[in-house]
Image (cartoon, rainbow, N blue to C red; front, side, top):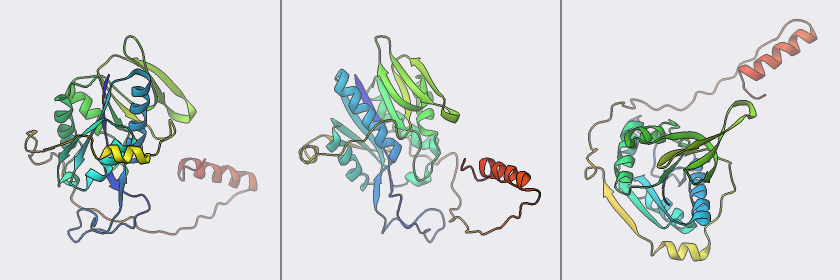
Length: 256
């Protein structure tokens, strides 16, 4: 079984973010970058499927030259080879534009299964994998925690609301969007890091894939969240105040 895993390089979660001078993206010069969290879980799911059923895991990533370090990390963890779509304007492309790039590159490989993360840590659209499936004309499912291969296709476990789960069956080929936390992530071993240096990393650019045109949606401005302080006095009896507080914590603050 040939599995393609789409991964994205994003700023580290603890990075101090500053808006660039144009006000349309963040200043990247002094940032540290890492593999998108849910993409790491997608990679782990692919590696476990390969260990059980054999086959090949191919990493697919779009981004500038620096994305190569994250791709090599995926190869060090056990992926067999990689494809990098060179695109220095990734932040200027909408979800449809990025999906076109990835789908075009993936189509050339004729994979049995494509795994993506549920959403990216930087933009968080949560749309790219679904659009890829539509462009490729294959079934898809999101919020996936676990994947099992069957004689007729796949059985997947989906996470629903309020602690509910759903098991569904899909035929192959298919696209799955993997949720974080479904399994334990592995670390790259020293031997894996050494092997990664010799594994194939093929590069293509957006123009070669025929998707160098302007995006359908344009990001006009990026701003940092405004810090706010506010106090609310809840009136009424102790019982009424407690009920009102629970209501606010549940539906407004969303902590219970």
